[in-house]
Amino acid sequence: MASVLRGPEVDVSRLADVSAPLLLDPSWQELLDEARAEGRREGFEEGRRAAREEMVDEVNVASEAIQRAVEGVFVEMRKLQEQHASSLLDAALDLVGQIVADLPVDPDHLVDRLRAALDEVDSPRLELKVAPKMVDFVASGLSDDTRVTVVADATLGEGEARIVGEWCDADLTWSTVLSVLREVVSA
Image 1 (spheres, rainbow, N blue to C red):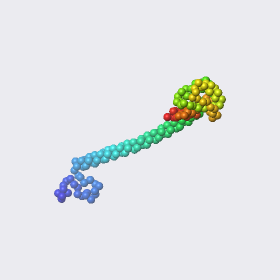
Image 2: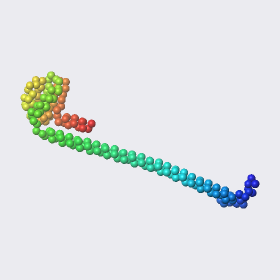
Image 3: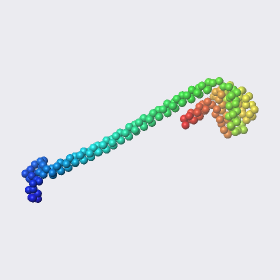
């Protein structure tokens, strides 16, 4: 070790001052300077890569949060759209119900409609309930069907009817028609 300390490459007089360069040989100093510069470049590049990766991770997290927020907005918009469509549909069907209930009834058309409904019902005896104003006309229009007895029902409007049989019933009221229509449209 003593021979190393006495060599021309090391200035032992400066060992006390660690911050000062210990190497006297210029080629060694260049190597040391290059190694330090390379270390700084590698450190800088490594720091840059780490910062880039961290930034990419942050952007991905932010992107996912934005995507969730946008999807949430679209879900809410669809809900609102469905609610508005549903309330518009309800309002339209209510209006249709009011209009249909106020339309004048063609007695011949009513008898034809009731005859078609009665043909679908398989029962030896049937009671056909209609509005009091329609009893005589419907009874005369269906007089050839001996299974049918026509009776007045004050709860029914003109153009409405209920068929009651031994094994089945049929409701031919506007409220039932609109209820079925609501179910079909809502499905």
